[in-house]
Image 1 (cartoon, rainbow, N blue to C red):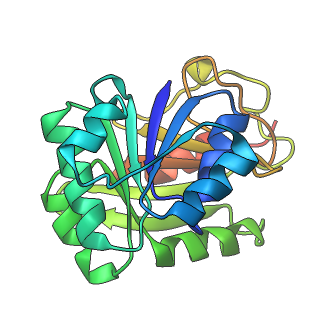
Image 2: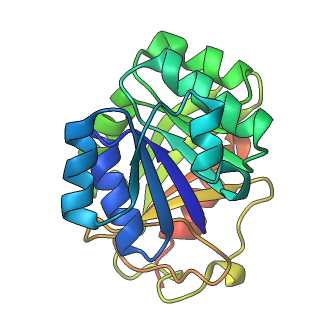
Length: 221
């Protein structure tokens, strides 16, 4: 899977590192020379210096063959502009963007960005990871669509542990977007992905199906 990541800062750099470690083809687009050099020193030639809001830069980065575009910069305006270019000009199948100001989340959703995660949500997700007694975290409602982004931690002894996603009875309309292992490794799941204990599953779920999804992922043997 080819993933383009806009920004190699506080959020982008760990994400890029994790995606590379997971075996994905990744290219970061970072305008700052220092940040670009930092990525290159740590991870090799997986970064280009440039402005991802430029169609020329996106074209040179191979956006037309990218499966996912992820915007992680500190500017909501830049994140939105780059995500829209990736989606509408280069037909990238899935766009994901960080939203730095919560009040801008609705604008991103109305613009058609597939998944938006606010910086507040990222903090809450980390808190969730430290609170295994609360395995369901409702990260963000997707207004006007009856959907929400949720995080569900798979407990030790869950019936789904050791089984691939294709074998699970996932409620209709649920989209699994990201799996974060207990060790912090991230994976964009496929039908072959095997669920392990302590995995945190990030999914887009119809509101009425979230409880059923939680039961599927947390029911004990």
